[in-house]
Length: 328
Image (tube, rainbow, N blue to C red):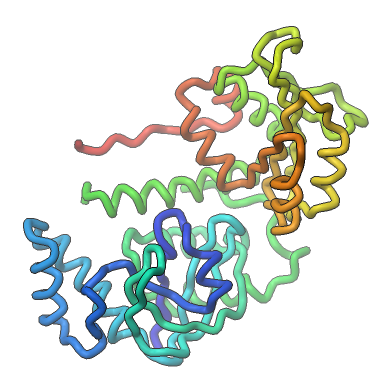
């Protein structure tokens, strides 16, 4: 039976909800009609009626993906969904029929899924990563790539590579998908940095945002890897105290409480963790009396991209990027 890759919205924004609620979905809206009872030609006619003026190629691409969701994906099909927050390809089995839904953000139709394994992106081969970078919302996954995903899902944490491999139509969908794939490749490069370069990269990001930032001296720092402030002397407010954790494990509530406990009332806290944060850690930051911002790998990379043009040469040398131009 064919396995299918489905994207959880732009940048995987719906991935956490899909995992928690046990479903997959698409956002193409046909007014609540049962698209599973419609033929491909009926889907095309309905789509053309609601999207007048779209090019033939764009109509064909959309109709093909809607038809896959309504008809080609069946009960028992394997589906793969990527969560950029955790860098895991989640594998599940479809257990329900295509049905319309109302009032759910970004979703017009859904199918129930039982989620099972999660495969770390870092454990996949370069060819599998490239294959899974297709611009389509829904596409088939080859037996070879699916086998690689299942192999990666079965690896113990100690066997996951410590360093990621070096990375290798002009419509909006292609541009967005290409951008998201570029973000994932940049994440691979960030994970391959050593901890000293990571601290320097964080300091460089803060400088690009207009702060005077410096990495603290080596040794016990009490959760102060980088100090930033509006002035070079560090006397003006707000002073940003930054902790940088460059490791695979997610940070929990204990680490965040300890970090907050070392802040002064006038400080602002920034905690960067390339391994992410638990839900309890985010709750701990939200309830803090001192403003604290948590940045996981995905958020850090997207912010770095946004500020890259303002970064100094030393920062760009650590993680150089190349701009890709598209026709307006």
